[in-house]
Length: 71
Image (tube, rainbow, N blue to C red):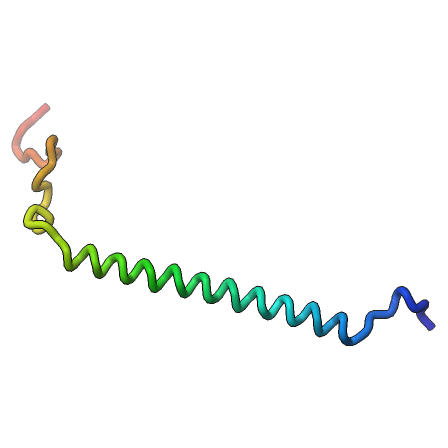
């Protein structure tokens, strides 16, 4: 027979499982929030493009795309 201080009651085990369950739910909700926020931000940025965003290297002060110019 185990002494009383070594035995775990079922309420202690269910409390630990409940805490782990709620922690995993919280992490899942946070991950979902980050994903949805990122998607919303990307869609907002895509809809609010400026004319120079349509062209590669437009608005660059120094362009490395100078074709045919040797160094």
